[in-house]
Structure formats: C-alpha cells, structure tokens
Image 1 (tube, rainbow, N blue to C red):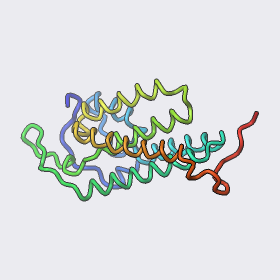
Image 2 (spheres, rainbow, N blue to C red; image 1 turned 90 degrees about the horizontal axis):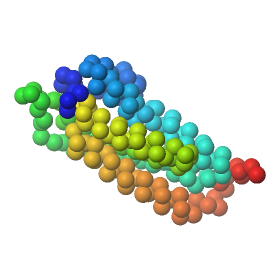
Image 3 (tube, one colour; image 1 turned 45 degrees about the horizontal axis):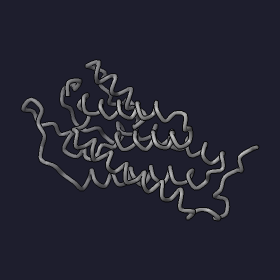
Image 4 (cartoon, rainbow, N blue to C red; image 1 turned 180 degrees about the vertical axis):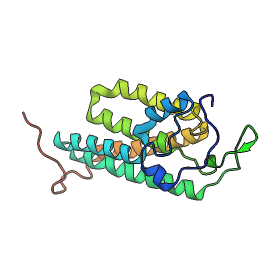
Length: 189
C-alpha cells in the first residue's frame, strides 16, 4: 500500500454518504485514489446508475432500465449486511491496529465501481473501453492507497459479478416484458 496515509478509523455513516467528507488528500497518491474512485461512492454511483437507467428507458429498453437500479440497491444492501455480520481478525500496519479494516469486506467502492462501469457501458456502448480502463485503475488504487485490502476488493468484484450476471439474465429473460408501462418510450425513427 505505497500510497497509504496514516491508519485511521472507519468512516461514519455521514462520511460514507457525503462525497469526500472524510477524504485525506495527503499523500498525493491518496488524493489521486480519492478522485478516481469517487464514482464508486454511494450517492454518486446511484446517480450514475440512474442516469444509465434513464438512457436505457428513453431508448425503449425498459427491462434493462429497471434492472440496473434494482441491482445497485440489492448489491449495496448485501454489502452492508456482510459488513455488519462478518468479522475478520484485526489487521495491523507497521504494528498499529487498523480498525478501518475490521469490517471492510467486501469493498463497496469496488462493487459500485463495477456496477457503474457496466451500467454506463450498456447505456453508452462507445464508452466500454474507457470504462474498463477506469475500473482497472479504480480497483488498483483502492489497494495502493490503503483504502482496502486485496481480499476486500476481490470480495467487492465477486459480489459485482454475481449481481451483473443477475442483471444480464433479468434483462434478457423477458420477465418484465409485457408488464404495463415497463417498456419505456419507443425509440424514434
């Protein structure tokens, strides 16, 4: 964790909801990590997923439009349940207990960054390659800046994979097709 600053306490609920409220911009690597991973913050990621859903809805892809916000809510709920029910042995950095890692599995930032990248890529396919590059940078910086351990990030990405598979199945299943008002407006010719 070469970009990590001094060990700190886990963020409060308010710090988790308000972007950059608890951000430490020292050292420089931590500041870069804060900026790159900002779309994985809870409220910002929700806004981005809703923007992708709106784009899908207005292009006549109602099933997909409904699946993305539902996936975000489900994934964030599962993340919170895991964080409050699972515990790990204490982790230390330079001989000092780091309480911020006691309940940091899975990484919510990694989870939400993956969901945001996938939702935006489905809504705007031309953005696929920049989004993949951004996701890779965000995942790497979460570890390098000391925000999460590699296992936290792997857990977030694993949960994201399960949720994204569910979105793909639901979007293609036709389950929502034919339900009144769920198709969205028809695309213009």
